Image 1 (cartoon, helix red, strand yellow):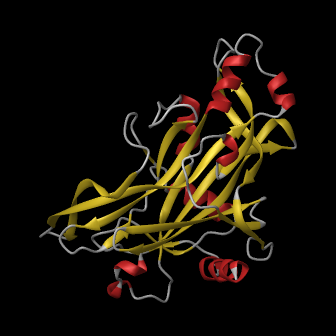
Image 2 (image 1 turned 60 degrees about the vertical axis):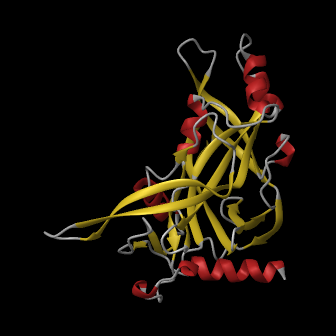
Length: 304
């Protein structure tokens, strides 16, 4: 049954080979009509979404349940000479879709600067990044929608609450970007309802070795979240491509991890550059990653 659901999602989302953005309704910022598949298409969609990830500030709760957050949008509802603005009030939940931990292999640990080695290892082993989505409810209409930009928070295995962004982590989460909410190309945009805006599409970028460790190249994975909402109850189902987009993996339900082993994704990283003093890493690349999945579907034809 799980494999059948994965095939249905893969075929529905990845059947079209090109990128197209629709004219958007007033209550949502971006819609995706076709999902990028090739490396060039993914790179272009990622580049066009350069502001596609927001940061959760230090001290804020790691998640916001039961629509406890509040925000307001000033949106254009009529264009042209008689441009009209409308303020829309929303209450929102902010919920995790996956947590990301990091791991250094023994050879990469041994290559760290001797003076700062223990500090770097402690930092790598001590925390994680939480990638989240905001689910918004229009106060006036009561309808509920996904917000297309993901949010990133830094967590600690030893301390509760959100932590401070380090420069290297900030660069990494900047490369996790939402490209929009998926609406099938045959769907009439003039007849969209809240239930049509429940599938989020994102792209993550990593640098990976290009032949050897001295050179790196960009690599892109697709991220999908399907949302189910029943009153105040929200379920987020997260799917990610893996193994150079040869697999589609359905991740375990999100939970705040107490150890790296509980993270949804763990990247095996190594550092490719250091600060001028050569003590603190300033750039990294990923050798491979492990996913904590309920099921994975191999699909080389779909992701070719």
